[in-house]
Amino acid sequence: MKKVVSLVLCLMMVLGCFSFAQADDEKMTITWYNINPAYEDDSWGEQTFEEMFGVDVKLVRAESADELATLLAGGQIPDVIFAGSIADVATYQNLGILATVTEDEIKEYMPRYYAMCVEKDPSIFTYSMIDGQNYGITKLKGVAGIGQAAVIRADWLTAVGIDKVPSTLDELEAALYAFTYNDPDGNGLNDTYGMSSGSDKENGKRFFSSIFGAYGINPFCWTIENGEAKFGFTTDACKEALQLLHKWYDMGIIDPEFVTDQCRTSGTDIAYKFANGKIGYIDGFNYDDYEWDNDGHVNAKWVAANPSWQEFFAEDTDESVLYSTANVFNFSSDMIDPYYIVLEKLEGPAGEDSGFYASSAVGGYICFGVQLDDDAGKKHKVMEILESLAMDEDACINHYGPEGYIWQWNEDHTEREWIENYSSKDNYNAQGQIIGNGQNLWAMYACNPDFQTLIGGSRMHQRYDLDLPNFAKANTVMDAVPVALASSAEYPDLTYSYIVEYMVKTIRGDIDIDATWDSTIQTWYGNGGTILTEEANAWYQGTK
Image (cartoon, rainbow, N blue to C red; front, side, top):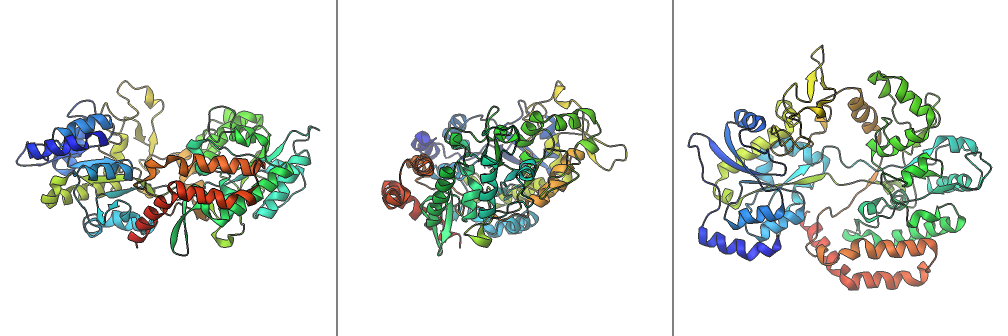
């Protein structure tokens, strides 16, 4: 989009045009840009939205950045612009097309949403600040900040004579050693390992994340040391964690294929190895991947590999039974064998600051066209609408369409439930582009954690009522600078490739960490890390 910056600015100066014309004098007209708009005007979603909020909404149809750039170059700046990342916000701000919005405005016109968000993250409304001005409203992820926990095979622990779930690095080391050398699967072969990890870039922050988390850091995230932002890879804690991993590799308890293993694929990844008895411990997956529903990434592969669980899901068609199994955090006589146990914690040198990696609570940003700097009434009206979309059940449910589309009330009219085979309907579209449900107009549906079970049923209650609260108790390690820095695109290798290459080599012992650490970190700073660190600290200090 940067290539159109000068063109946009020039055309805007010539046209003096900053918004679409208002078509209805009686109703406020709001032009609205978000992904996946309905294919045609006057859809069910559009009519419902207009009736609910007393406005005339005009959808801006741009399915790509290039299409949006064309509209902007024509002087057509939407009143409402949903941005996926702070990098998008920065691009729009550089074009000069965004209005400012203050935290005080959010607090005044979105009070319920504001309170919910700051409870989750007190700094959340500072993340869209650029040069001291705020250019957006952070869209909250209702289910975020949940640690990507670790799980361990209960049957292997029992087989090697361990009756306590590991909760420290020392206890985990003993279990991994026994998993490797004490024949936990009882086949008489030396064919098992304690653990592996995936180093694929897409899932980089999962790389041995529970081990680094025990040292209080993630090598791919910013952390705070002595009041200053520092990239996790450059910390002494990272060096110490790498030394431990190298020790474990030399002990033979890390699968040598960790170099090529992937974290999350449809084939042979670490979840597959775990389910099929090649490794006994994995980390870095979300809570719903561990859910006993025969669908989460880890659980689906576990069920596929274990006939006892296949029989359970095949024989019992009562959903209240199928989706009644909660994750366990200790040995349980109620579980079908074999099963895995979730680690409540894994404590290391960081002590109470040890934790599992968790993603930030940011799900994007809502921005306003620059014309709303001169139309506070419209801006505040939109903010009130956004609050309702996030906080009012009768508004939020429209994301899923009208009753009878993909959901219906149960017989007692006490709970909504999914309609069987709804996806086979002629007017069904996963993105809501046929009838106008979905994320385009109803974009705040995932913000409110209380609305995760708007459409209920046993499976949803299993996820959000049985499992989520327990996972939410775990301590976490999060990125202290959860925004894209201005120079990050100029130094893409510094935040992943450079780091993972060095870590793999030091874990395997290809290079000596003590002999190379200082020079490696110096190179990181010299090749752009200093600039990134300065920007990270400028942002961090600006949020205080």
